[in-house]
Length: 283
Image (tube, rainbow, N blue to C red; front, side, top):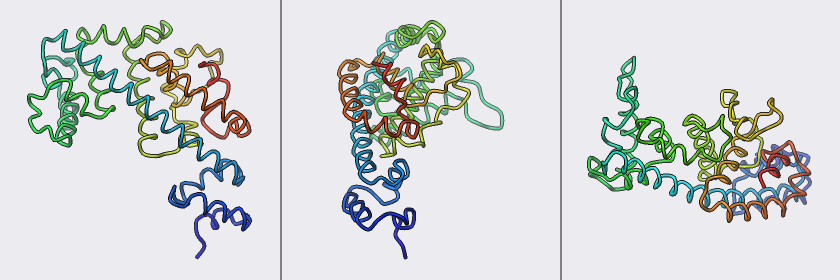
């Protein structure tokens, strides 16, 4: 029976096949590496370089996204605790939007019950058994980034106004809203999950990751081309370069990585998620 590489790329020479198998040994599966061969039209040397670049990019993104996650969760906890006077606001329905406390049709849980249920599960998996009195800091840092984004959506507006203003202040005026903030955080979450799960960051799987309902985010990057749809990757990078406390260091390292691989990215421009022009404009 033919193996995966031979089956998917029957025209690959014996030399190139052996080079692939030697390179991926103890690094990844044949299925995983096949995406790079498809991306490069079976150019093995370029596929290997793309794999190395993607691995470095994933590690770089995850490092600074996790730092940003710690930063924004702490800022949120500080602001809401200051305004609510509660060291456990996340578990108190009185601090949520009225709509979030209301039951939903068809027996679905309220947004409050949904969010707090998710956070409690995260607390349990972190061996913090007494979730009822769990502090805001422990609860927020135990929960997933997705659960945190939901919490930001459903906490009462007066409590979070200053926090929201801080994290949209640099964006153009049409984008200075809670809706834009949570949309950007959702972009970061998608990229974070791809990196954490070892998925591709440069292949076509991210090319159309942004659905049409998010087209309003185009306003936030001042695009002269209103018809252009930005990828999740581009929007996440744009936001991190505006609001991360480590943005100068992140910008320098990301720029160096992109510059060092510029010829490879340009050669296959349009076949991966790193469109050259928007990324260059970010710097």
